Image (tube, rainbow, N blue to C red; front, side, top):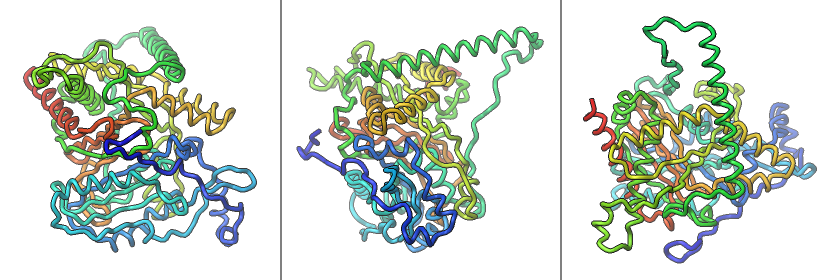
Length: 512
C-alpha cells in the first residue's frame, strides 16, 4: 500500500529466527536449569507472531516527571527485566527438529538501551516524540539479540519532563502480561519498597432477591439451567459468526477499514489524557464497569468521526457534517485478543526477576469479535447501554476458548502458516482492535523516576486502527495506533472520543 507521500514502507518480511545447534559450548557450560530452558519451545501463539503477515511489536510510552538518568536505568534493568527468561533469550531454530525454542544468552545492556543526544529546549517536543515512535515502527527488532529495547528521550513535553519508549516483540507475551511485567519493575512513589496496586475485578454479584425472601432450591436450579442454555446458545452463535468471518463475512468498507497489506505501513501513536473520575461518574450512575464505559465512548466517538468522514467532498461540507451522513446497517467489529493463560500477577513476576522464582508465562490467545452499533443517537447514554448489552452477552460465551482451540487444531494439523493465514483472515475481515488495560491506583516510579502517564500501542497488525484505554491513578489515557494512509487525522478522532465522554457524563448528571 502506498503511503501518502508515495513511498512504500517495507519492513522485514516477518522475524526470521537465527539457527543454532541444539547444544553449543556455551549452553553445555551453563546450568542444568538453563539446559531445560533451552528445550522449551515457543508457544503456538508466539510462533504466529513470527509470520510475515503478523510481525507485531508492542510500544509503551512512559511519561516521566523528572529528567532521565540512563545509567541508573541500565543498572536496574540488569537486576530486574534482564533476569526474566524471555528478555534474556534468543529465539532459535533447532537444526535437527526445525522447531523454534528459547535459548538463554548474555545480554549486553548497551545494545538494548538507546539514548539519543537531544536538545531539551527543542521546538515542538510533543511532535518530536510522536515522530520518533512513528519512525521506530518502520523497522523490526534485531533478531540476533533478545527482542526488546528501551529508548530514553530526555526532552520536556507538555505532559512530562522526559519520555521512555519500551519496544517489545509480541512473541514475548500478550499485552496484559507485558504490562504486568513492566509494572513489576516499578515501585510506589510514596513507599519505594511496595509494588503497585492494581484494582481487582469486582467479584460481588448483585443479589436479585435483596430485601425479599430467598427463593426455593428449584428456582435456583431453573436460573442455573437458563444461564447454562444462554451460555451454550451464545457460544454457538459466536462460533458460527467466527466461521462465517473466516469464510466470507466482511465488515463494511468504511473510511477507517484497512486496505490489503496495511500491516507493512508504519503506525502513528497518539494519545489523549482524560479524567478517570469522569468515567467513574458514568460507571456508578449506570451500574456498569469502566470497560463498559470505555466501549460506549468508543462507539460514540467512532460514530461522530465516521459521520464527518462520510461528509467529506460533499457540497456545503460544514453544514453536511451536522446532518446524519452515515449509511444504514454499518457492520463494524473490533477484534479483541484474549490471553487464556491466567496472569501471574505483579508480585509473582517481581519475585521471578529478583529471587529467580518460577512463574507461568506465554501466549494462549483466543479471539473475540465485538460488534459496534455505528449511528447518531439523540441520547448519548444509548451508546453506553448498547455497549454494555453487547459485552454482557460476550461475557456469557466461550468464544475465546473455542477460537483458541480452532486455531490450535489448525496449527497442529496444517502448520504455522495455515494458522497464521486463519488469524490474518479473521483480522482483515474486521475493522479495528480494542483493549482496556487497568493500571496502578497510586503514583509509581520506574527505577526511581516518577511516572506521569502510560500509553501503549503497537505496529505490524493488519488493522488500520487500534484503540487502547490505559488507566493510571485518576487518569485515563486513550491511545490510538493508526495507519495514516487510512486515518490521516488521528487527533480529530481523539477529539471525538473526548467530546463523547463529556457528552455522556453531562447526560448522566442531567438525569440525576
